[in-house]
Length: 138
Image (cartoon, rainbow, N blue to C red; front, side, top):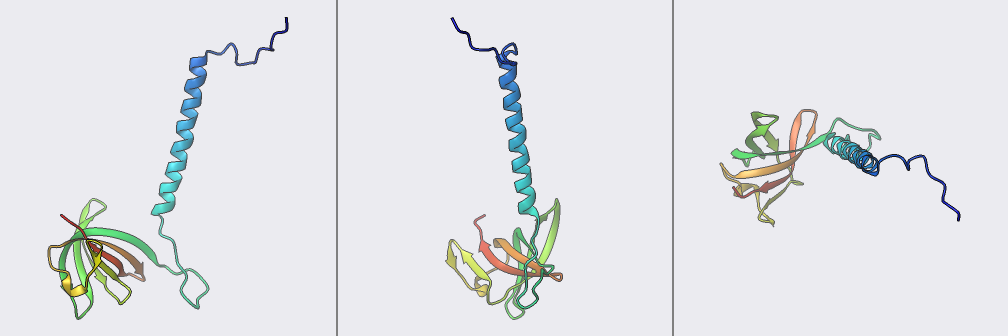
């Protein structure tokens, strides 16, 4: 009767083999997740029209409570936590800024002091400009 040839791993306990395969899978998954997180957290430079090259523009998110709104100067001051410290940031608002509350568009004049907000912004040459302001529920 013909017998199949024994592999080099046949004497190796199956439990240890499965444990090593599981550990290798966890290691590979961890590397993939870590590289994805690093890719998301890096600000990417964007090109400006006509320049043909990247600028120093970066994007970010900031959550906090509205400290003040200046409709004439089109700015909003928000106090919140960033990198384990309380920060107060001033964002300029332009005609491209989208402002929402409960998925409905609202105007800058509808924003009031002490409202909780999350702001998606871009930073270019030290100036923070709001891309989207979302009024959140406390």
